[in-house]
Image 1: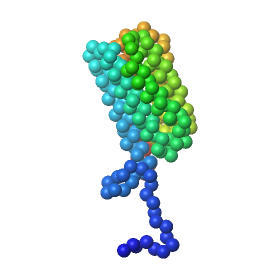
Image 2: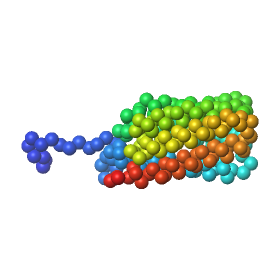
Image 3: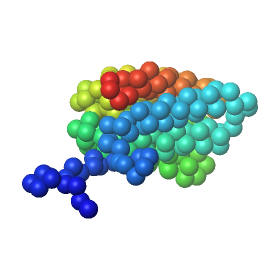
Length: 200
């Protein structure tokens, strides 16, 4: 028997992923999970890149591709949040940039270290500008994360500049610089995580 009162509209669940018991989590509740995933991705890739002994060019390509594909997925996932929709154009372009960059480095025949440095530097400069745009427009996962986007953008710009100033760096130098960038970016997401928790 229905317990709805006459003339009273039924409450519809918020859009989102099914939670425990068949309930649906609102987009805002997904922010902490996405930030945690971003933090884990950055720190894990950074640790692997820095500690990998005698890393080869092929391994550098693989490390960058994993990071790029993960960043692309997270940028796309951010579009479901209210804040992400405010900067959906920048987010979508950012996701496509990450995806294309990962595909290019994997598919490039006869890729050399110098070419890889230039590709990653270009990716870092463009994504840095887009991250700053997202941050300034308030399009982060959470209110406090908009500043995190801007910081991530500045770090990305710094990575691009450093690599362009040293295009002759070897595979080990390249992966260490990139690993440091990935780790700091992951830690920045981790610092922002408490501000995205429910009730904050």
